[in-house]
Length: 311
Image (tube, rainbow, N blue to C red):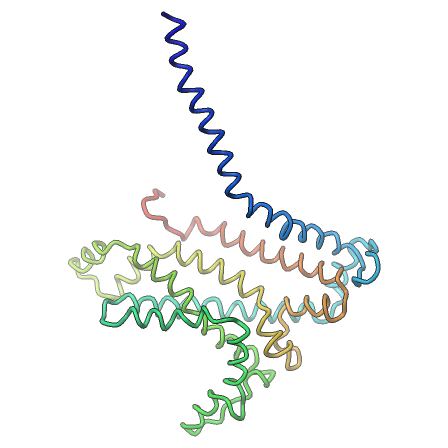
């Protein structure tokens, strides 16, 4: 009787173990395309670039091991290293908060229930889906100081517009202004965050006499902190990796005023064929972005609120 009972108890355990193995096998089969992609197309090239960063290599001869020389040169002797880093950070410091604020304002407007607001949501979202190079070519014409749309519009009010991307003083602000073109992508995420806030909170606050401003400050913004956190992280990473505008629109100019760090790196890799130095620059940028991301993550516990959590 005792042995029979033990066998009955063991059967479910065996079945559960077999089921777990099958589930694990299916899991690894399903993620195997991503694993193969990561190992051969991401992790492999990353490790290779780490090795090349300690070598002198022009892609024609064999790499020659030179230790930390590339890193020392970049940090102490490269005349454009700090300038490109300063330009990149300057762009990020202005464009990231600007895109966050404009995206949130648009989302608040598009969240109001009005006839036709689905059409407006589509209109604001569409620009972020257009190919990057096509958008950049279009903006080159928009920024043209002689025939461009912007200066033609300013001319209607008797204002003489600047040289935009053709003027060293206006080139970087022009690209910051242009970054608002794709704000619709972030607006959709803001809208998703707004839809997640229970309407009952606003109804209770309204009954207590809270006006629209107080509802925004004390309900909307605190409950949107996870969305702010996500948009902030992705915004910082995207801004510090800015490259296309400098390559397509300005070639880093005029007078290196839009020489973003990624363009500086690209110039060493494929302009001067100094792949070892370019790899070192890539790893320095990776460490900078990693440090900033970890800094924002470490501070998130003090200002990001997830619904239902207890402090």
